[in-house]
Image 1 (cartoon, rainbow, N blue to C red):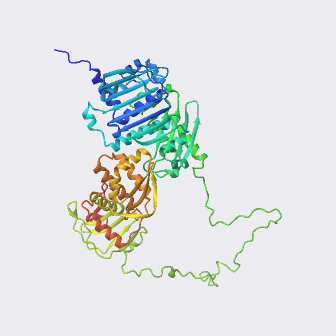
Image 2 (cartoon, rainbow, N blue to C red):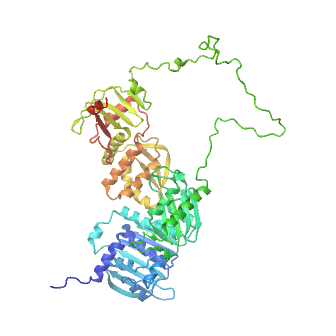
Image 3 (cartoon, rainbow, N blue to C red):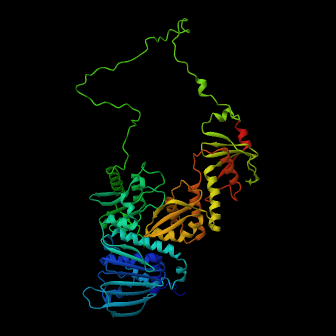
Length: 619
């Protein structure tokens, strides 16, 4: 029997490694910029064409490489960071495994120009698909200049799965922001299709955060600072009043490296318990400094998941530090007794004589002098005209049964016209019969009679269903009616979110939004859709951008669905809103005119029916 196991060629092995390390253009930028940081660069330029699909260029003024190092750097597992296994637990650099450049060269065309400080000439190296095409001496500045072209040119299946340019650019900006936030001592510049998106000179950390996400954050951040023998924690957390459901900026860094850590995230959120509404998030930028021997960064190809040796103790330190910060800046509410309506307590004056309070009472009152106790003279008090309090009640056109009238949360209101509908659900007639009234229960449900029993409709979900269908039709027909605003509002987005907004502007316009770019990630909201008066247009636009980011804004139909759903949820009547009989009748009529009245667009039930037999069993 012939042998079937053989060694993979280096080119194939590098492509397999690239599948883990290089997932998209953002991965290339992450690895190259981290190498520039390790090379002690003070300035880093990133230039991308077509969101990195056509070209990625990273230029730094770091140490550079010799001719031999330049050639060896593209060999797999070639690294200057570690020499033995124990070095993995004493790392203070970003890259260390020696996989990045080899992986990039395996799936792209790479052009490298690099020179050491004390050398007159540098090295020019061209590699494509792991194959060295040329190597020569060249005159170039100190540092390294990487150009990566045609990413995944030799792996068409991988290239086919790259997302739209707006999505890939958003991912590039997110990776760029993570590195810029942890190195305020390095100047970073980013250009997309020759347009400058970031210009970040050297600056203090707080100013770097504002330069990335906007100056508005300056008034929202509270500093966190604690130093223990186990760990040093610094950074900023946002004030409770800035909590939002989507789009919070949440960053953890350890020893200069970005990380995700759900366990520590819970520690931060626990500090805000009872300070922010359930389900909302808070922004934070928290930096850990810990002995490298106490963490393991080598458990994930992208090194974003990090294992700590003393996670529970760090959790307690982090939670206490955030709580201390909130308390120090009076973000935690203190107990405040209600003094409204209480008399003012006069200040003590030493010259004023102290006298006991006088008690006034009625000397004529005798509870035993009444007709029921011996026929004596009864005590006279002002008669209470209880009947006057109920004057006018009971004179309505319709009599409400006593059982219903005693329920304080049900309002029985007459509709102007009976509802006629022939919608059949669950195989039997459930449309409202010719009823002259609907009942609203606890400001949430509409009760109406149907042939098979009693129908209960969730008023908010019903309105979401109606509005969603309306907004989807507007998007598809591009006929959204815009309503101009008297004073345009300004909404600010960081670069990564602004790229997503640009990709959905057409759909927002179809809904009725009129947005004008002011540059620098700022947009003026000049018009809003009809029917959303009273809603905050800035928060609404932000929510739709964050929804598009979560869903992946390259799937156009899905994004349109999510935009319509976000609008519908925001504009729908809320729980607790009292409806007139006419409003309830109109809502029920519009619901049964929808193609799918049973469920909301995201699958929640809108209505249910209690059958007449079930009701009879209770009596």
